[in-house]
Length: 104
Image 1 (spheres, rainbow, N blue to C red):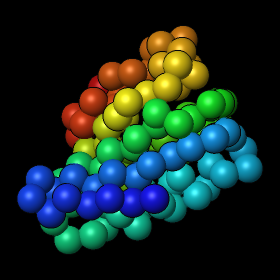
Image 2 (image 1 turned 60 degrees about the vertical axis):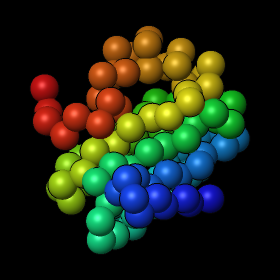
Image 3 (image 1 turned 45 degrees about the horizontal axis):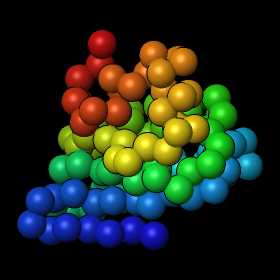
Image 4 (image 1 turned 120 degrees about the horizontal axis):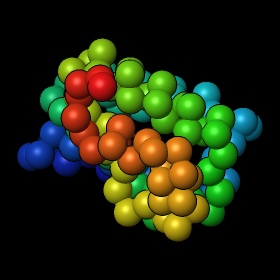
């Protein structure tokens, strides 16, 4: 599900269920489609309903971040579930999804 707020320039993609090898490409493709929309400054991934996230899905999120940066917008994670928070903390990648378009 996609929600786009034209007033703030934020497009929100709602993700749910298990994110893994089976759907990693759809994450990147979905973000790319939204990031290329006129007026989008931030792509937000609402991850409140994600019950499982593996390293391939995390890799897809990192690729999606690069796609956003190439379109001049940021990628943020909103309302991460416990599973998402756990993996981001274990991999020390939380900082990647704050919306900062720079690469460290």
